[in-house]
Image 1: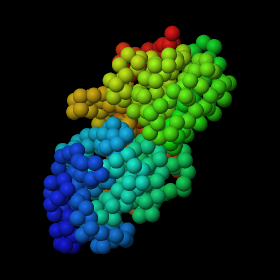
Image 2: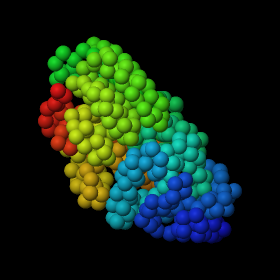
Image 3: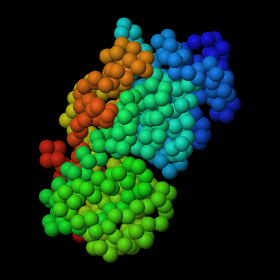
Image 4: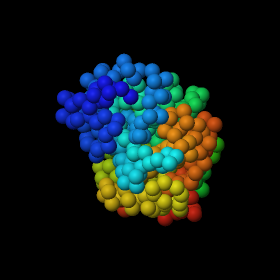
Length: 441
């Protein structure tokens, strides 16, 4: 890399007040930046980006540079502000706990060397088009070897077209919709099992434990992942001979759900199933309470996995059921800096004072998969990393990681849990169950 590029990267970021390190600098602790800015662990100043844009614009140039660097640079576009900020923070923590563990051990083993990890974050402000733009900047201007996907299926689907064009692998920790992986991409990998791996076992379980379960209603956010999850639930219900009496959709950013909830209540459902993100589901649950609308079973995805959901709702969170792609009690042991599910949970809780959920664990699992791919490939070149990910077959604290032909993880045990006493209590499957499903009276 030229000295001119180094100097461009070493300029002071006037917008954030941070010094942007060159590619030879060691990674520094991350800090929360201003909305709409890229910020460290490595911050990308807009002035530096403009200075380097011409020199770093082509994938061919980027490919040559990767072989020369001694740092494994990974881009991580996240919604650190806006409606999805709680989810973005979880992903960031999942990456950082891994990077710190790896770097404290000397770095990723690549051939006969140890290569330090450098995370490059960008806040796309919960705006999907900006996520794709951030990914392109990371590839063309920061020369990342890989990208950790943004939050949710919609943002991953949009931004994966960028990584595909530049032939840089993207590992997506929070995208489960099959539509994301049915694009024919060769550089996209995901660590969440598809939605039907959640909905089919869930419907069968509820039918087996809830007496006379005959009718349900569905309310879904009109966004790629939540809507796909609702549609998969509808299909799973029909397969289990459960009538779907009402299927309602709400727009992104909706604040008033009274009309949809009133229509759902009129059908007198046994089971209410709601999809969306944390802030959506908090709002829906409060409005259900205000309307005195309830059912024997209320299931929400994905908010109940998060402490923020429990803290915001207090008693209203009780007996809400959900599904997780990972839980700390799962009996996994494998490779990476965290040997077991329990080890990971303890390390995470010690650092952040909260029990991790599947979003954080999946983020760390993506990082472990990339680490193992680099060790296998003995390279941090994007093409070599992609090829190693294709053939990866490992066991980790998160469970087995093996990507199918479309890049999505092939097998995963997805526990059903219910909030009881302010905690997630696993109620299925039986081999990891911590208690029984409580029917809402």
